[in-house]
Length: 309
Image (cartoon, one colour):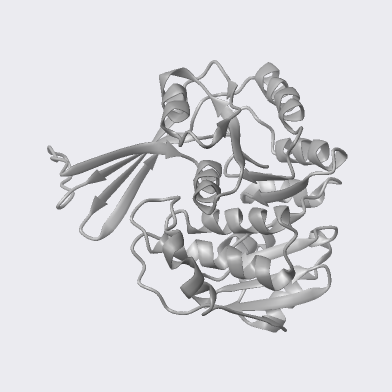
């Protein structure tokens, strides 16, 4: 069983316009409303992959109920109710561009934050791998992911953390380390306050810094250039073929799904990295975020190259 945690989920609303006009009325051609948040994308892709998956996080109000009712029935729902309302995140698609309007989300009070920790401890039973994705809601301190990782580690669970900014920095500087982190180059640059190039030697130097000590896997997304990874003291470069990209949103979440699946199934390094990157690419080939067409999996799998560097 893989548990996905989304502490600040949303209802993702997509408005399709022919063009966006400011300070006047815009008529929507097409609208889609789906359960959103990075961890819920992870859960959907794991479900497409055929994995046993459970989804958790903090939800509230009618929008929280929408999430529960609109996730696939085959995903186990283990959400924690809070008083605040789950947020909306709006994407306006126009002129080949995407303009996003993102609500901050509900305020989680200290009692609710403590309540989720207790809930999390309860639902760890029977879980092999935990993924933790996305931003923290208002009211949760920067070290909150560290609290969850401490519990997961105490129960012998593998953890995959996909976050950025102060939340990631707090975990890296803390005593409780996840099994895997999955930053991209921009997130590394923000964290280190310096440019991070695609050069192998520079990436090696970055990932060998003391800040990343104690983390088993570091997998860096390089976009169209594939990925760079460090597993213990071994480095890998993942080379990927060119594909037609329809919607790159959620590809990082799909990669997290592949990492979690690889860990849960005790796959070797090459298999884990190949699966993770194939799923990220499959998501980019679909219009729907957090969805992969497994019919194309095997063909793409054969085209990736994972090499030790």
